Amino acid sequence: MNSLPLITLFDLPIGQQGTVSCGPAAAAGEAAGHELALRLFEIGFIEGEQVRVVARGHPGGEPVAVRVGNTMFALRRFEAERVLVAPLRGVMA
Image (cartoon, rainbow, N blue to C red; front, side):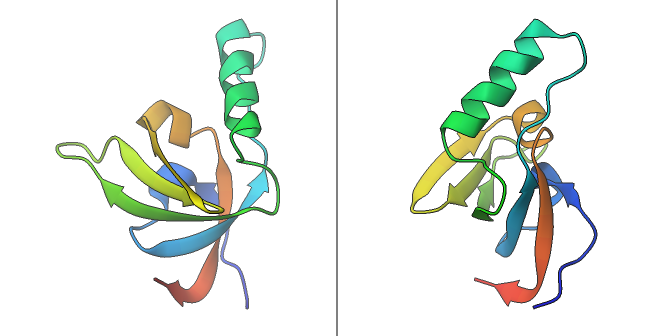
C-alpha cells in the first residue's frame, strides 16, 4: 500500500492506520523532551510499528487513544506530536 506524507500521530484521523516513521523526537537541548522521547520509545512507538488512533477526548481532541501493536495508550497532545507517522492509504478500521 502506498503511504502518504508524514504527519504527527496527533494529526492522524480516528480509525486511520499508520506506521511509525521514526522514533519519538526530543527537542534539542531539552532534558524533559529526551525523557519523554525515551518513554514513548520504551512503550512501543518505534520505527515500523503499526499505530491507529481509536478515539479522542473532548474538547480539543485530547487525550488521544492510540493502539500500538496489541496495546492501547492514552497520550496527551504534546506527547502524540512527538511521533511522526506515515498514514496508510485506504486502511481504515
